[in-house]
Picture 1: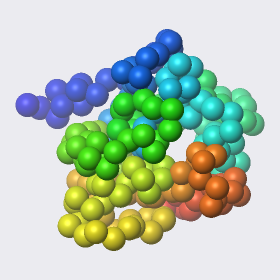
Picture 2 (picture 1 turned 45 degrees about the vertical axis):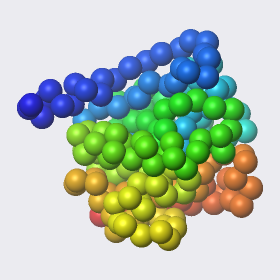
Picture 3 (picture 1 turned 30 degrees about the vertical axis):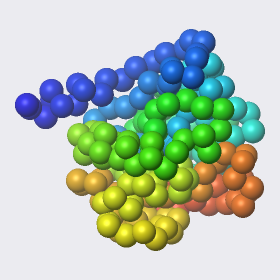
Length: 202
């Protein structure tokens, strides 16, 4: 199979629809992105809205809008504040979206460790095929299974740029932007995306 055929396995898709627990958000991806954001799993609310990180209380879009990481996208779109409805347009600026587990739930805690572990091979394959410069995991819950599977360790990774690579893709771990993650603030999330922006310049 050629490289082009492999890439076509993960087409860019846009979808807005109502949902059941069996439905999900489609991947918004393309080959050779600057950053592929990897969420834990879609919330039922985000799937119903048809956009990534759609809940207003989620810190993803407010933090990204305040970060140097999104300057080019904000200038290109002519906005100061990015919002969930910009997720598809972000592909034009080198940003894509997927999840560690694609099954939608009301809370990420509803995903079992076994389900996370079962998705490792598919996620690693997706990243290896698409070859983004950096895969940015949104929270340790989604990154821990792939970290442990590929390193053979039982410990937890630290936030920031990882030594682990998937193919040519570097890995970066951010705090989860979910409001359920009370350990981190909006300012913490902004700093993490600013650190990611610095890594992209290296």
